[in-house]
Length: 97
Image (cartoon, rainbow, N blue to C red; front, top):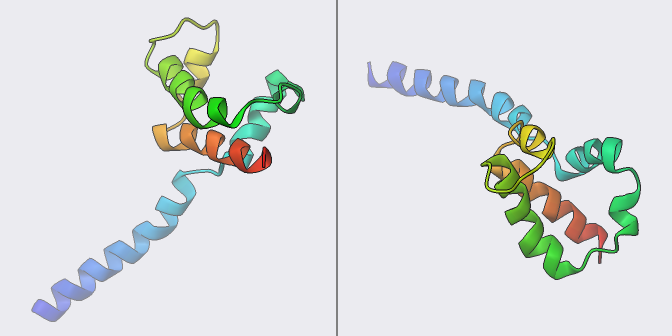
């Protein structure tokens, strides 16, 4: 019986892996979505590493949790997990080097 329970648990864990992988998207994909409104301004802004690494993630989370006024970013940011919003900074940080 223990063998069957262990196999069942392993089967469930293996079946969840693809779902978990699909649940989060990469920073690159999110940044491409950002460019639909912000256009090429993201690169033209020449953002500092300090801003990208510290202020941008906090700003995006502030939009998500209604701690910063926005016309639309508050609604858009709610569509992403906190981790996915962090991926934006991770991706832009790599682009900026």
